[in-house]
Length: 455
Image (cartoon, rainbow, N blue to C red; front, side):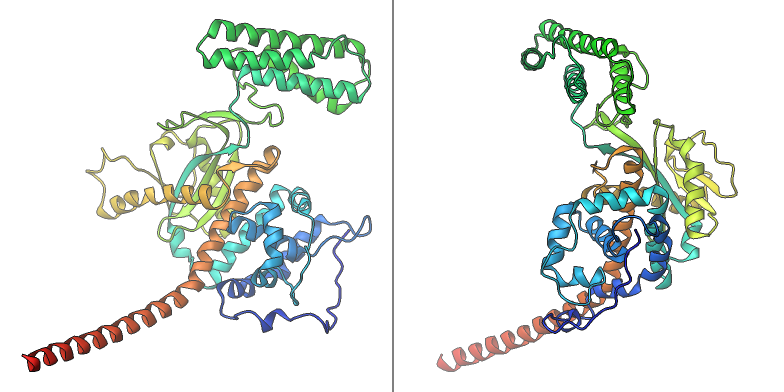
């Protein structure tokens, strides 16, 4: 059901936030700049008219999502810090200081699931619109764009055959117990013992014995799988899904394509990006478009199926043009985009340090500037929760990437409002330091004069 439009009543025993906060604080100014009403109208489409209990206020839910990805917090921690921080409460639309939790942390998950990947992009568009209002991002900045890809890793352990067989076996046994299916044997204890032995043998480099334990676990899984198929005539959707995953796991070999790397996240892919410290990463590929001049993120997408970088260029540029309503002119990419399929109006420039002779000075400058996109990926991963995705499914991959970009853009806007305060503090500190030096010089001169008089 839609959130209620409750009338704000006068609270006698509560403190108004306006009386205890600094109106020039960057978070206050950022809150006043975001068009919350327009955002609420766009998101209300996802709520029904009559069914169910009234939902929480949209500004509260959106504000908590923004703050979570700005400050790299979990759902639990951002709800906890909301109670402690009056600026967080003001940002989320509170008029009075509250001393109790506004929501249960699980409501954050349900809100993201309700919005979906298409509607969640409205939150990202609002950050671009806010930056455009104060002219931090202009149409001129859109003339030079940088495009690159990275890997958004999923929250899974490193996959091995033995762990996958054991985990799938436990899942099937749980499904059978729930439906009261009589199994000949559950292999609960012997499978755990085999997994422990396999890990010990592998650690001791006794690979023949380790492979024997892995084969034993596969045998146990196959028996339980065939036992369930034999004893169940009518299968529900959940059981069919689990059995299809088990069949996929049992049939895959070392040379198979589209292998299964996680039981709870079957969409995970193995991606090799040529990194010295991490040869393989397990997750999905994410493409990002940034302005070359000012480093604003103007588009971000999650791609499944491990596509070639050049095949993601067309959709990335189209998404950036759709979000900003501006037309791209020059797009700077690295050598991974050779043989791309983009056929639009923008000029695609591939940075190659061995072929710079026949290029103009201006083009060389922008090609060198292309590498500015790399630290943005680093900030997204270390500061905005892109490094390890905890959200479920393919939709979760896209939602996490979009909200991470929201957090990055909001941090840039926060810095815009913070800089005047920092400059003022710097001037005050410089002035005090200068006066202190004058005072110290005067004291030293007096000391020298007194010493001369004594002599």
